[in-house]
Length: 90
Image (tube, rainbow, N blue to C red; front, side, top):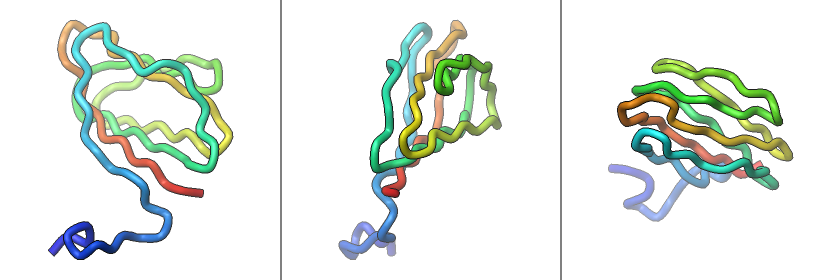
């Protein structure tokens, strides 16, 4: 049984979800305060902005945005991009 069904969750856990962005879609540049976020690319290609430095991400890549850092992600392919996003309270 999932801990969510029991009304329990680990103390630092906030969110874990799979997200799909159509071609050209993006999540704008933003800062994490009090949380950290991890992206795991499942499918597709993206440009990830890590505190002002852009890097290419592909299926199997992971990006981490620690508490206090800034980031953004954009689907730069002509196909949907899917990724797993996990937010952790710090």
